[in-house]
Image 1 (cartoon, rainbow, N blue to C red):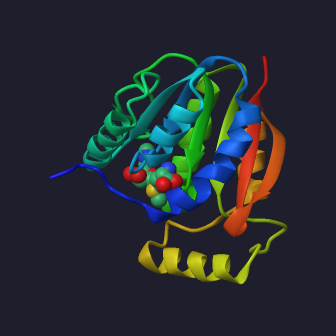
Image 2 (cartoon, helix red, strand yellow; image 1 turned 180 degrees about the horizontal axis):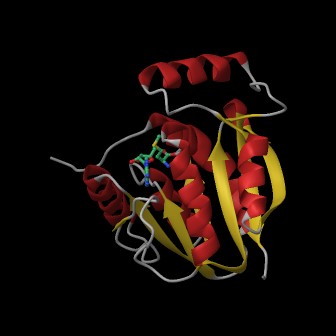
Length: 201
Ligand SMILES: C[S@@+](CC[C@H](N)C(=O)[O-])C[C@H]1O[C@@H](n2cnc3c(N)ncnc32)[C@H](O)[C@@H]1O
């Protein structure tokens, strides 16, 4: 039986995200994807961005198998074997990277995981490297759509530590650690793409 898992949303959001990555990640370099999930994003982005080396990761062993299965099917030689990374670990098993991409983890984990992701980005990004976050956020103390409000309530009923985060809170936690907001782009289906640039100091 195939190890490939499928998340239907990835097929809907991958093209608009790729559109943004295409101009954000112009130079050759290594991208660390945190929380790759099924691995469908990794396989799609790596095959469409052949100038990049794509390092997918997740903490879940079944997801790691799924990531490698999607990568094998894609047949791209710029996608590395999936690496087990729990962002909350103080040490991640790799060196510096040019960009970090993370989709849809921050609202489906304890806020500690968001902080750990930002701390990890500070440790592993090269100066001027980018932290790119994709997912739903509250903005100006409000949800951007009623569907996000319902989704938030559903998340919190499943786990009180989960929930859609305030964009301003995530921005401030990043900026305190020298990751400066470069762009916030509204995306389809009431999501946002946040781009932070690691300062040189
Ligand atoms: C909703 S899925 C998103 C997967 C994929 N990025 C996407 O957009 O389809 C959330 C993922 O976050 C991962 N995750 C949750 N907590 C994590 C942590 N502390 N460290 C690393 N990954 C984590 C889960 O294993 C899961 O694969």
